[in-house]
Length: 405
Image 1 (cartoon, helix red, strand yellow):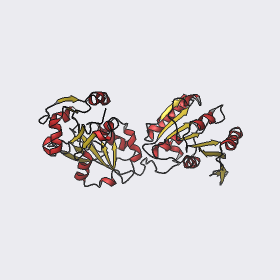
Image 2 (cartoon, rainbow, N blue to C red):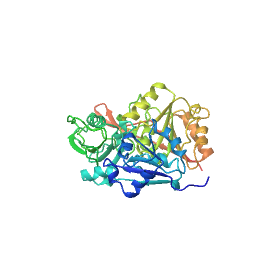
Image 3 (spheres, rainbow, N blue to C red):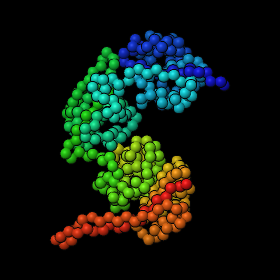
Image 4 (tube, rainbow, N blue to C red):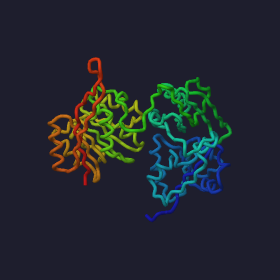
C-alpha cells in the first residue's frame, strides 16, 4: 500500500488539560477517529474527543495491533508532556515509518521541574525508575550532582530516600514535585534522612541534590574499581589488571560484551558502568559464582547484566552477537577460543588473560593464527616483611588482545 502520510499523531498533554493545548493539537483530537491514552489522559481530553477511545491495555505493547489496524485513519495517542522523553512515542516510532507519525509535544515534567527548581536542564541528569530497578540510580550518586528522577508512583520518593540513606547520602536534599502544571501542583523539600511528608501524589517527579557523607559509597567514574566493591571467593580480576583489560576491550557506546568465565563479574559490570546503553552477558559454570555475579551487579547499579549459568562454548549458542569478548577463565577448554572468535563482529575485540603456562600456550597459538598482541603485566604491592616492608609481586598475567578484521 502507498504511504498514507501522517495519520498517527502523538499529542503531549499536561495536567492543565486541553485548554492549554495549541489549536493544532486541539484540532487533531477533535477530528480523530480513535483516541488512545491512559485513563487520566483520556479524561483530560474528554471534552474535545468525538471519536472512539481506547485506554492502554497492560502490557501497553498489546495495544499496538489495534492502532496499526487503523492505518490511514486519523488516530491520536495522548501522552504526558514530551512523548519522546521516556514516553510512548519511542515505542510508536519503532512501529510506524517516520513519514506517518506526527508528534506535538507539550512542556514536559522535566522542563517544568527545572523551571520550578531553577536548575539548568543540561547540567542535570535525567533518570527513570518507572519499570526499572531502583538500583540503576547508584552510579549517578556523585557528590554535587543534580538528578531528576521520574517516579513510578507515590511510593517512589520513600524508596529513593531509603536508597540514599543506605548508601551514605542521607544529607542529600530531595524535592518532590507533584502534579506539575495542574491546579494541584505542589513542591516539597526535605533531607533524605528526614521523615517524608504525607499524602504524596501518585504523579510526581523527584529532584535530588546529592550530598555524600564522609563514608558514602560513591562508585568511581574510572575503570579498575577497588577490589572491595566486588564480593568474591578469590576469582577476581584485580583492579590494576582490570583497568588494563577494560582498556584493551575498548568499550564503545551501545556495545555488547561476552564475559566468559566471569568469576565475580567485575569485567562485565565495569563494561556496563561505562555507558548505560552497554550490555553484557556473564557466563559462569559454577552456580554459586553466578549468583554472586548477579548480587555484585545489583549492588553496583547494573541489574541489567545477564548471567548465564553454564559453560562455554555450549552456553554461548543463543546469545546476541558480541562486539567484544573477554575470557577470564576456561580459555584452554576445547572450542572456547574458536567459538568466541567466530562469533565476534568485524572490528570486534577479543581479550584473554592467562596466569598458567597451559593457557599461555593457547594464547601463543592464537597469536600465531589470528595476530594481535601479547603483553605481560606484573603488579607488586607493599607488604610486611617481618618487622619491615617490601613489595611482594602478584602472579604475572599474560594478556592476549586481538581485533577481528
